[in-house]
Amino acid sequence: MRFSWSGKALALLVVTAALLIALDRVSAIVAEREGRLREAESSVAASLAAQQQLVGPVLQRDCEESWPMVVGEGKDRKLLTERREIKLMATPKTLDVQGAITLEPRYRGLFKVNGYVLKATVRASWAALDDVLQPRTERTSSTLRCGDAVLFVEVADVRGLRSVTVRVPSAAVTVRPGTPRAKLASGFQAALPASSWADGVLAVEMQLDIVGTRGLSFAPVAEQTQVNLQSDWPHPSFQGRFLPDERATSERGFSASWRVSSLATSAPRDVRVDGQMVEQFGVEFIDPVNAYLLADRATKYGALFIGLTFLGVALTEVMRRARVHPVQYLLVGSALALFFLLLVSLSEHMTFALAYGAAALACTSLLAFYGSHLLGSARGGLGFGAAVALLYGVLYLLLQQEQTALVLGSCLLFIALAAVMVLTRRIDWYRLLGQWRAAPTAKEA
Image (cartoon, rainbow, N blue to C red; front, side, top):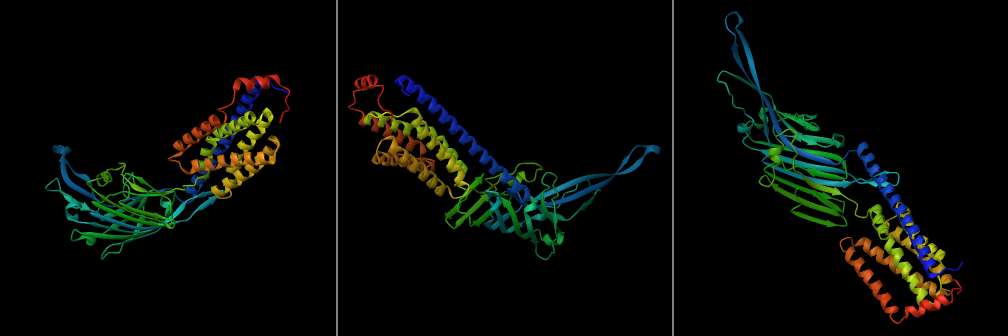
């Protein structure tokens, strides 16, 4: 079939539109697979334990003041007992957490979810508890009754509690589920008899073994809170209201330390109010090489990738006086679009780098072979394949350098434009188009 230049331009527009639709469908597949990953994360969290948040330890003591009251007169006179409930709260003076986190990945089909086990030693101390946990009566003739102080810790998902032990000096402590707070009911508690803080001072040591997924956070409920974490996960993402004062990461894992004063946070006050949001800090165990995220980013460059390749083919038409049929443009573009689908599917079975290399090698080899027939020589085909391989290399660099992707992409476009301008600087476009119009029956490549 012979094309006029206007007809060929229209055909190329149709080809480009078809390829953009194909890229959009690949993007939809990437989004669908990423949605499946989120479903897998939710499934593991529902079966194991969700992201864990620890608030506490905090002391609460419930007291009741009662007093007699006479109501009515004469025969209607009655003696009643009035009561007043008192809830006293005490947050620690110091809180020290020493934790070791081991990652235990869980799988749902092809999808990996980062689960973890936290083994922590928690030490908390209180001072002047006689003033804080001993209520003052409002009536001179009243009677005051108080129960034991209850130490409690709120845990976001109690299914993750493998074991908990609580130790206080000179007292045996039994750990029970739940907390005495209505709005913070998920956790554990232990009743502490008055003998354990008879001198107004209390020191508590807890051993925690907790399972969770994705992330872990703490609330700085003490006057001075210190948390030290170590883990075998090399890619932490620190979250919350406070970043670590010290942190170190390597291929073998990370260590991080937080030191938070009550002068810098409202958590010690907020935890005393039912339902109040408490400031927190912590870490998430992210996977920096998220194959679906990288594949989605790669697909977004697909239109630019195809456009640059088509520009190279069109430049070949001009420089070599060859004619490339729109169907041939379609086949070349289809190979480029198929690369992104190969990338997504292969990355589910191997590392992203290997998947990218395999998909790029397959498509480059195919285009080099096809280019040798398209351009009429093996040398031309190798040159075409090398140019496509260079584009794949640049695209991989763009994917790895998220912060500098814009400047790298801009430089790539500038270099491509400069190359076209340099190579075509001596072409007389009026004369060239006139020659092609005069010879419309030139042999198609």
